Amino acid sequence: MYKNFDELPVMLSVAQAAETLGISTVSLYKLIKKDNTFPVIEMGRRKVIPKEHLKKWINSKISL
Image: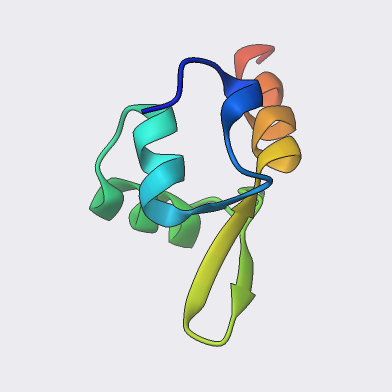
């Protein structure tokens, strides 16, 4: 478990991003499918989330 956002790896797995957002992995997969602004990179079947892009995405949702 990470104590703050800066300790997260540069690229997060779906499980790490879900834990960071406080939701289940299944919920994050649904969010990725539903929200085309979510910052996910697909590499074949693998999905990764760049930490800095996730941070910007979270901030854009907070400011709504």
